[in-house]
Structures are given as C-alpha cells and as structure tokens.
Image 1 (tube, rainbow, N blue to C red):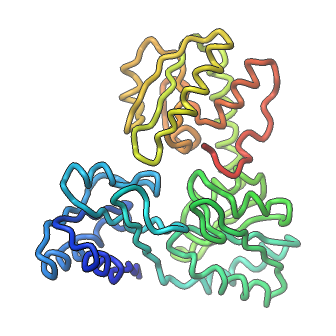
Image 2 (image 1 turned 180 degrees about the vertical axis):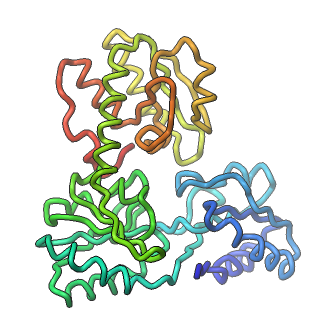
Length: 333
C-alpha cells in the first residue's frame, strides 16, 4: 500500500497560507493526488491544481508550471531525495510502499550466497526496507554493504542517472541487489558499476538477473557512438526542463565537436522524441544533455541520439582512441 506524507503538505499550507497550490507525481502515483487535492480544497478553500503531465524525477519538478498557474507552492510527490525543497516553489513530499520483501529475500538467498559481498540498494518507495533487508541477509551468512548517500541521494538510493552509493562501493562488493520492481533502476546499477546486478521484485516475488539486459544496452550504446562517428552535422540539444538545463555542458560538447571539424546546430527541447527530431532533416546525429536514459534505454530513433557519456566516448573515437567503460560513472550528466 502506498503512503504519502500528507501531514507535511497540510503543515506547509498552514505555515505559508498560499492562495493556490499545485501537485504533481510520477504516473504510478498520479491517481493518489486527487483525494489529496480534494482535502486541500475542503480544508483550506484554495485553488488546487493536479498537474497531469508526466514527471520523471527530481529533475522534472513543476516550478515553472506552478508559477504560470499562480500557485505559490508546488508539491512534488514520490521522488524522495536527501533534501526537501527544489527551486523557488517546489516542496518534495515523500511517498513509500509498505509491500513486504520477506518472500523475495528468501528466494534470493541461494543466488546471493554465491557472492562474497553484496551491495544493497533501492529506489525511493522502498528505502525504509534497506536496513531490515541488510539484517536478514547478514543473519543468513551474506555480507552486505549499503553505500552512503551523496548529492541528492540518500544512503543506498539510486536514480535513473545518479548512482553514488553503488558506484563508490563497487570495488568493495562482488554484486548488487536492487530492492524494487524496476528494471530501469537495476539496469542503471549494472551499467554504472559493471557488476552483476539482481532485481528483487516484491510484487511478483522473483529475482531477476539484469546481466543480459545490461549487455544488450551496452552494445546498443557502443553502436550509437560508432554510427555517429561519420556524422558531419550534429544537433546538440539542451533540455528545457528545470532540472535538465545543462547549457554549459551543451556548449562544451559543441566546442569539442567544432574543434574536430564537425558542424553543430544548437537545439533546445522539453520532450526529445523521434517525431520531433525527424523535423531536423539536415542533422546527421544528435547529442542531448537533458536525460541520459533517453539515449541509453530502448527508445527508437532514426538517427544516432547520444547521451553525455556517449558524447565523451565519441570524442575519444574521433581522436583515434577506443572508449572504455564510458558508462561506469557515478553520474551520467
């Protein structure tokens, strides 16, 4: 069952007395927002907007949208991070899931016992289960390390593009176990650390080896780099979402490409899709500095669309070097 820290929402409203507020959340939590919005309207008599657009993480907060609506506070629900505010308006509200990991942890024992040391990690809704899982595994003879939080991340937490707790402990463990039903996050752990990674799914009660998927995505990422090698005109895309504006990085990549004889068109976009990119018919390949997972995951584009780590590897290729372990980083931006 999903639990949302509603008391913090109501406490923030009582303290700041806004005339209007907005709420947003990832798709899996969006249906939970309307009952909260109704409570706000009934208790405080203020306009309450539920933002229906997709939200992909703490990089995708609704400061700009809230300002356009005249909402003094934007409550961003479900992407728990190490601090509780972002930008001028956004207040981050924790959400957690009380699903039991007991059965899937028992199922994982024969697999995890093959490794001398395990790194344990999770995503936002299950962070409260990490310590309980660590004790269970150690009681059953498995040595466990939970990496310390850094940046936006809490202890043992991973994002889609940020991996400090696992990356900085990768030399101390032989494999990682991610608690939660998310191949997306488990894939990030596997690629960023180069270690065997298992997803412990408490809903289907299964233990999933991510190795094959990680190998497939790594090969796809490498192929994209070499497809882009012969491009003459690049579109270098700056993201327009608030937490994805990497203008400095965008201009740095532009300068490096031009130094190597490439033509560059600077683009800026909120949503990077195949349909939108197809409009730029004179561009041979794209590099986007918004969200690395757009390039690394299973998106289909007619032309190469590289992430920042792939762009760095491309520069090495253009200089006659072989790229090595370009995704093994603590942060893909």
